[in-house]
Length: 448
Figure 1 (cartoon, rainbow, N blue to C red):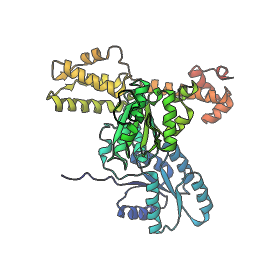
Figure 2 (figure 1 turned 180 degrees about the vertical axis):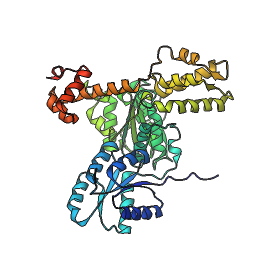
Figure 3 (figure 1 turned 60 degrees about the vertical axis):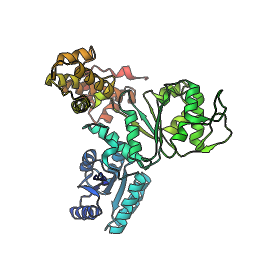
Figure 4 (figure 1 turned 120 degrees about the vertical axis):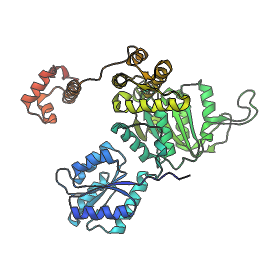
């Protein structure tokens, strides 16, 4: 059986000197890196969205968007993505400033080959790049740039032991992403253990997490290993962490601080080596404000935050997900059915409060209920009830975005039109026209 191919590290190289760009590309490809080369910072941002680099090497001085500006944009869009700055001798002080702002390091021109390769290896190691095969993300069926961005972030953090907090609506795939992070990590050959913190009573949850010593409960005849022990060397997912009782939040916090497990009824503390990933559909900020979730635990868990997009923000995935679910049903049952084109259109434009999980259930139901090989639109309408909506037109979506944008700027400036117009880079007259078109009154935002 053939072994899966390992993924090459992807490096984006940015320089307005064609000769140097070609030289760097040749050197890096000779070391088996996948390389994308562009000539300025604006092209680099577009390439980064498509190419998903694990590392960026950029010149400092460039027209349009220089290395410093590119660094800021990359840090904003892809936290954790490392950048190595290229600089001439006269701009070394600027390069030092760039490293203080978050660049991994800098190389002076002309770039010495071994120094380049050493810097690249160090940057990839620190960024957490893992040369796993693509099986780690096999459960995700997507062509959405937004979803690809979340997967790139997950792969970047997988090579580290940083704790991850995954948020998102129910049915968006939070547990799938936690499993993917585990599969892409050096812990992949150790256990992955998951527990839903809202699915059982407090005492039972405590016992499941921490275990108990002989005789700790009436009738107990032996030690019971908790999930922190069962996940030793691997990954533990605390699902729906927002529903964990406050008393157990204290115990989890202490365990994270000390890396020690204390089973119920035992005076012995057991060292532990477990990576903790948490997930929730709740607003933890709101729970903290209400005194229902500990702030210190939140910051222990939220080292890296990944927010899973709902299905209505990745509608381009709906047709491919539907095809995937139909193929799975056909494989398992031998029943092969397809949707009528207008039925696929309805699925793609409907509201999905239950997200991917709801879509899968609807497809299963439609296959079971359809009397013909082609599933008609009427059956989809029955399945959705009143849940199917209408995708807004381009003009409607643009107007909705513009009104939201203008409202946000007016809130920031407290209704000061001159200041708001400067932020929007529009003259005052045009800005007033925009406000009138979208029925926004500046005085309504004063004192907010």
